Length: 262
Image (cartoon, rainbow, N blue to C red; front, top):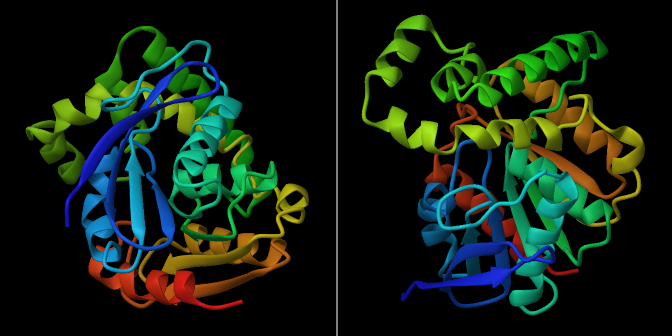
């Protein structure tokens, strides 16, 4: 299957780079924090026999442009522009904060007939809001001072120290630093971090909310809370999977969901 690369122009004039592969109904993949279109390519390849898949670099990443000041509404417009490019209506899969962004797009009326999200990283516990707010402040200060590496370390602070040290010493660290400034974008997408139950109640799109059976309990709690808040959703758990879900495990349930009739 031939992969086609292109760019669209978002409502504010920002160029958004994307890749299209496969043939069939359109399906857009929205990546999470620190990720680009390339991150979602393995999953897109597995889905491409059934769908025309679109992966894209969210603004500020990879081949896409950026604009200041950042606003979540602009990222929603980016996704809406890609939906328009795909034919005016498209199913969407969102990973982590990409799932949060996709839910916001659906809530604003972007034509998304079906939506699947994997572990949107909200919190279901109000007690965590203050911690998230403080982390956001620290993250923004570090990025404003140009300390991208320290901002990355803060964002990844829940990793075991030896794993974090190994990552910092690896070639992958430079690629992560290149998109570290967008961490504040992902925090903005999450709002105050709590599941926005009232907003989700307005989403009429059919939604599949997925979590991993080996993921931290707070992510699984959030997934169930999101599914409960949505009026037309169901929840599914992938046994043994973590937040770093394996594409070959995720692709079959996504294929089944997006190919359902009705």
